[in-house]
Amino acid sequence: MTLWITLRNLRTRWLATLITLLAVALATATALVVPLLTRQVERGAQDAAQVFDLLITAKGSASQAVLSSLFYLDVPIGNLPYSEYARLKADPRTRRAVMLGFGDNYHGLPVVGTETRFFDQRLKPNDPPYFRVAQGKLFGKVYDAVLGQTAQRQTGLKLGDTFKSAHGLEDLSAKGVESEEHNATYTVVGILAPTGGPIDRAVVTPIESLWQIHGQLSPESRGVTAVLYTANALNDLYSVAQQTNARPDAQAVFPGQVFAQLRGFILQGQAAYAGLSLLMLLLAGLTVWLSVHSAGLERARSVALLRALGGGRGTVFGVVLLETALVVLLGLLLGVLLSLGLGQLAGGVLGARLGFSLPAPTLDPALLWRVLWLFPLGLLAALPPAISAARAEPTRNLA
Image (cartoon, rainbow, N blue to C red; front, side, top):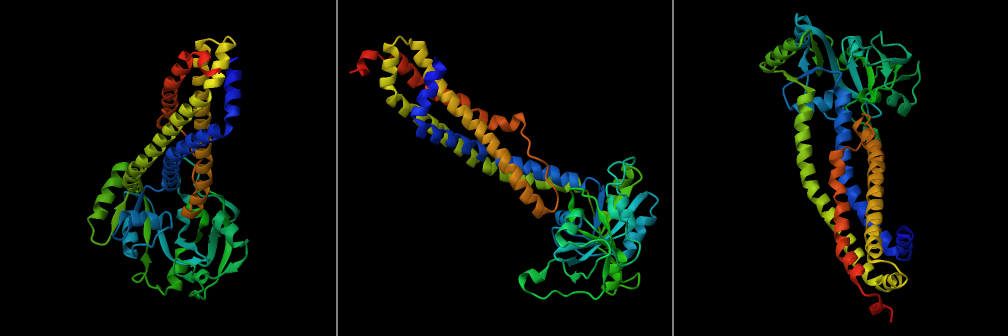
């Protein structure tokens, strides 16, 4: 009986109920969606770069080194001399040293110059290679090219097709400016299986092609933008990093440390955003209180009729509390679903811009506790009108 009366009251006051429900839902979604997206970006970036132990580049910003050399999102700091790569490769502590070269693009997609050892990267020593060829083969000649899955889909290039790269990291033709196209012609020989990482939107070619295109024909003139480095043992990795950082022209960057620093900045932004989220939640709590208060004034006659028909004080008290509980609970559920939907949608858009896939948004108890306190707050707001309704004399409002 109590539930039936509650549902009937909510249907009668459908507009006020809807406004309260939406206020709770929007406040819930506002409090959750940014932390969800932040965690998606953190997990996606770590998953995309965890295959690389150490990144060695020219001296400069560590975050710029990671963004440019691992994610292809920034301008490279500069080039290392080829002799630096040769020194690292010959070091007995080295398990693998892989060259990277940048400077060209094809329709805005980065042309990554490297060597075949690049494709032998593994998450763990006994794991299969992280990069796998879905069609064709790896490059073998200077102007062979292997496309990432996204790059192949965006360009429409197929095995055997040819193309020419342009100077720079940006597609100037998209801005109406004529691109400086190189004369050399690449041939597509392979297409990689999707990884969810930045390589999916890259055009991978032997680094010798970049040297030849840019006139770096002698070893002394050749430049290497970055070196992906793996040591034989963990202590070797740290000793190589320490020695590299002591050199005047090179730096060793641990991607994990860069992510930790960036996460600190993100958390500072989240702290500021948390104030806005709290304000939204308090506004939702105020909306719940106003809804309950106004409903108490509207329900005076219906409560009197209920009491006159034999409804006890406990029934009246339960109806008022149940109305509030249902509205707040439905608003919370709707807000959680809305935040997950927005996180999924925004994650897809953001992942496409960042160049790596973001995992699906997930909620944990710590995030849920940010919004679940609205439920007891709503019940607390409903207590005074519930007690007042239960104590009211039915004859006062039947006239």
